[in-house]
Image (cartoon, rainbow, N blue to C red; front, side, top):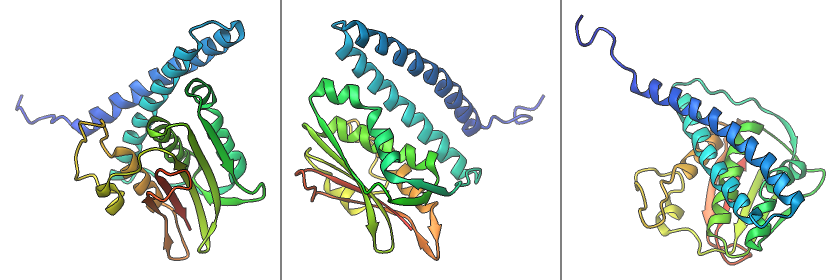
Length: 230
């Protein structure tokens, strides 16, 4: 049989492997949630370490979701499902996932959003962006994060501010750029920002396209991430 009779599609193999790993990790996260609940009820001293394990597992899961989504986008197999969502409930739900870690790290995370504010977007895709942004904010902040949503320039803006050291200059100039490679000092691959950039551009309305914006003008003294949706 010729060597090229059935050439391997490495991208497909990688995507399939990532999908399987993500499923296994989802089961692990579910088990961790159950164990964590029992640990908290019994007030065992390992509660702090359980919160850290949940956080790190959630970060890996977020990365896998991003990789799968980007693969589908590259193969034109990802279509956003736009629907109306109320922002206050949406943001409170995502912040609540990290409450155990906020407690362990003695951090506060405020949500500022009008109860009546709603927007049109793909819930799953935007959830991926917010989860990753919050995970990074927790990693680089000192003790305060603020998540907010508001109307701006005829569209919807979701903003995450922190009191960390801010974004590097190269990220501020091109927030969706992947050409900078890996930052071995911080461990950053810029994948999260690239994912956020691509997800934002999938949201279009009346000739307007979503985009992300980074700055170091946070009210808390650190970095500010903005997701603008039309």
